[in-house]
Image (cartoon, rainbow, N blue to C red; front, side, top):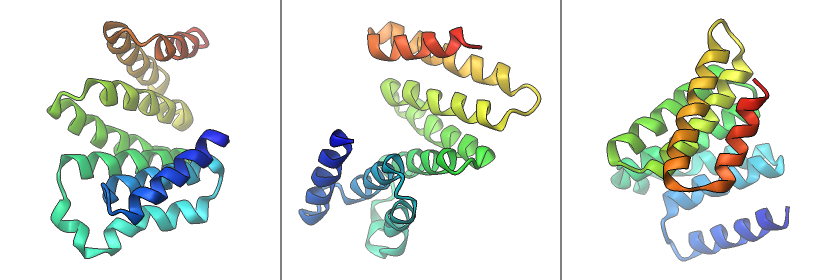
Length: 156
């Protein structure tokens, strides 16, 4: 929780300085989600869409930031189909841009959304998502993510 408070403070400072406002808004929404402050999360998530000045900044970074926050919000609220769609949107941007770290990270959320939705074939889709993420993080040498993914795959 102390890390989230520190992140919240830093992101608010970013917004005051108008430094990467789109990403900062979506990351701040994610902080609120993780703190369980859902009303604030929704309000923060909606800000970039309400402020027309952000439309000029719509690019891959914007689209991926919005999709990541949308996925996290949908997962927190149990809206699994929306979480899957948002995760897939973020993954498509990361894949197209070659952002392997974020692509691999979003695959974890995609797997989580499949587990949550729990429809026919979702367990296998989750396993594939986790395995792809594990393979990518193994190539990158990211031991923390490797451990998380090995644990998730071991429970399946």
